[in-house]
Length: 491
Image (cartoon, rainbow, N blue to C red; front, side):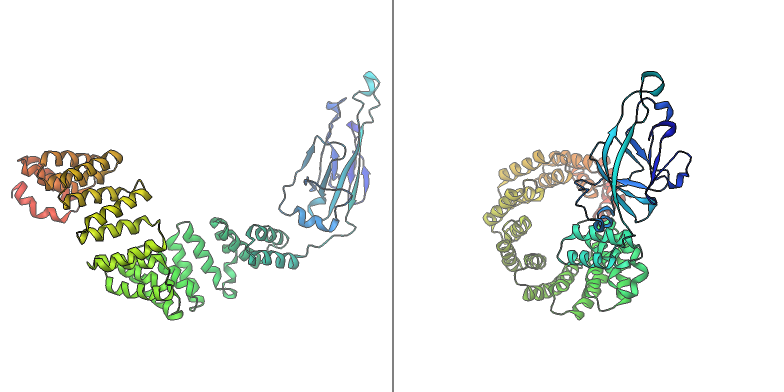
C-alpha cells in the first residue's frame, strides 16, 4: 500500500483496489506518495464520504455491532487517520451511511529503504482486520426516546440530553425529542439551547400548549422579557387554564413596573387556583409597589394562611405595615422573618428602622450592628446607624458613624450626600458643601445634592453659586427646587 503501486480497500465489496480503480470505492487509502519514498507514512484517508472515529476503550473482539450506532451518534468524525500503531482500533462509517465497520491494525511492515538505491523491497504494507455489519442496522428511535424520557422524569438531565441527541440525530423530525431536550437544557441552565430546541417545536403548538410556556421561561432567564411575555400570552391563547402562564407573565410585568397588568394576571391565576399561595404573594408585591398597603397586607395574610413558614411573605407584610406607620406590627413580622431565616440581613435592617421610628434606639442599634455583621458592605446600615445616633442626640457618635461610612465607601456618592445632610442640619454649611461637592463629583446627576448645596451656599451668602446649583437641580427634575429659584436667582 505504498507509492505508485499503493492500494486501497473497498469496505462495501470487501476487496483491495489498485490505483487505477474508481475513487468513489476507495474507503481506506494510504497517503504515501512517490515523493515520500523511501519513507512510508502510517497515515490513511478516504477518497469518498467514508469517515473515521476513534472511541476510547473500544474492544475489537467484544464490542457488539448492534451498539455501534448509539455509540457514535454525536461523536467527532475524521477524514484522515495519522500515526496508527499495531492494535489500534477505530470505527469507519462507510460512505456517509449507517453502515459501520470496526477495524483493528494487526501489522505494520516498513523496511525504511527504497527499492532502486539501497536494496529495499518497496513492498511496505499495513495489515488489518475488521468486523462489519452484514446488513444495515436500524437505530431503534422509539426505544431510545423512551429511555431518554425516563431519564428526564428521573431528573437525570445530562443523561436525558445525551439520549435525545441520539434520537434527533437519527430522526430530525421528532419534535417531541426537541421539546424534552429543551426542557432538560433549561434544567441544567442552558437557556439559549432550550430556546433553540423549543423554537423547533413551535409549529406543534396545538399539540402541546406548554411549548410556548417553557420557551417563555427560558427567554425570561436570559433577560428577553418582552419576548417572554409574548410567549406567555400565546400560551394563554392556546389554553386559558394554564396557571403558570398567568403567574409567569405577571412576574415579567412586575419586573417591568407594569403593576396593573401584573395584578390582573395574578388575579386570573387566583381564580384558577385559589389554594395556591404564589399568586397571592405576587399580587401583594405589586400592590406594595402601588402604595396599596392595606390591600397588600390582605394578600400576604392569605399567603401566610396557605404557607405559614414562607419568610418572604412576613418580610413584605412587615414592609407594608411600616409604610402605614404600624411599626409594632412591622416588628412582629420582621421578627418572624428572622426566626425563619436568621441570616436575613434586610429583615434586621428594616426592623431597626421600625425600632428607630418607635424611638427604641438601643434595639435599632443592635439590629443595624447585626446587619453589618451579616454584610460588611451594607452601606445603608452604616448610614442609618449614624442617623439614629443623631436622633438620639449623640452628635459625636453620629460624626464617628458618618466618617466610618465615608472611609469605608469612598466611591459611593450617597455616603457623602448623607454626611452633607447631617452637617447641613447642624448648620455646618462649609462642611456640608464639601460633602455635597464630593457627592456631585461621584454622581453629577444627583439633583438633590445640587439642591442642598444651593441651600448651604445661600446660608454662606454665596449667591451666584446658590443660583447656579438651583438651576441645575431644576434641570435634573428636582421639583422642590422650583420654589427657590426666585429667591436665589431673582426674577
